[in-house]
Amino acid sequence: MSTPFPREQPIFSARAHVFQIDPNTKRNWIPASKHAVTVSFFYDGNRNVYRIISVGGTKAIINCTITPSMTFTRTSQKFGQWADSRANTVYGLGFATEQQLHQFSERFKEVKEAARLARERSQDKMELVHTALSISAPQALLPQFLSLALQSPAVMCVNGPEDKMFRSQSADITLSSEKERIKKMLSEGSICEINLEAELFTLQDSNSKLVSALHEANNNVQQWKKQLNVIHLWLGVHMESHLPSIPEIYM
Image (cartoon, rainbow, N blue to C red; front, side, top):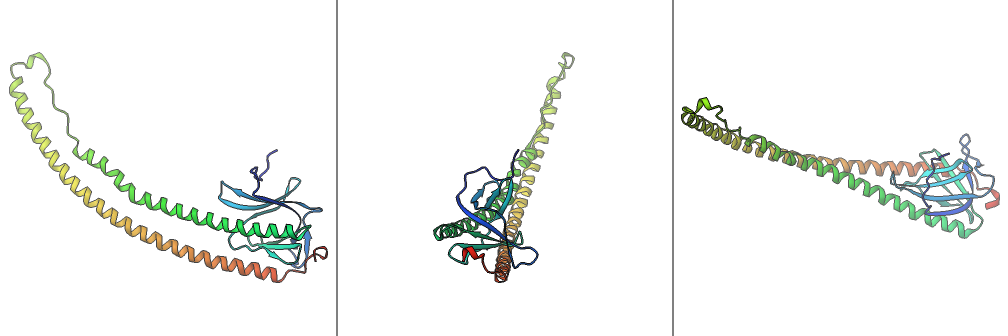
């Protein structure tokens, strides 16, 4: 039976007892595992995010997406905790030694920084793609417009042996007429080309304005995200400030 958990090799793993804050009282720790379980950092390449995952049997004890605003707090020599605002909970980990807690805490900082860089690269890549598409699309259509505008009609043929006596005269008249039509088409094509060039310049100017607007909108989004991160951080601190004391065995 398939599971929703990643099959990639973990970035880092540690053994710890997992606790979760009581969702009703927000004051008591509830053991999420009866014994120490493996807690691992994973990179999700499909979504370009980092996760902390711990599985007990077939059930996910922890399935947390790491964000740049998260902070792992060491509250004793063997106990640490962090708030997950998306899941509206706080996780606690009890380790067997102080060294294990220190290793997990340091790796948490590294992965949090990697998550921040991955998010920034994803945003920059998306902005470049939108900018390139908005500028190059009108230019790519220009050769097709010019080809259609300059396309000339086929030359008329004289058919049948019964037209042999009048072929020369009628052919000359037809050829002259076709030449005039071709000249007219070329003239119209030149006018069309000029109009298309003018339209292209207009589109490029519009694209420049759109790119500027896109940069301004992106800056606004960054400001909003900073404000949102501040709110998340405040919520995490607020939640942690109301936490109970750590389990006695880790004091």
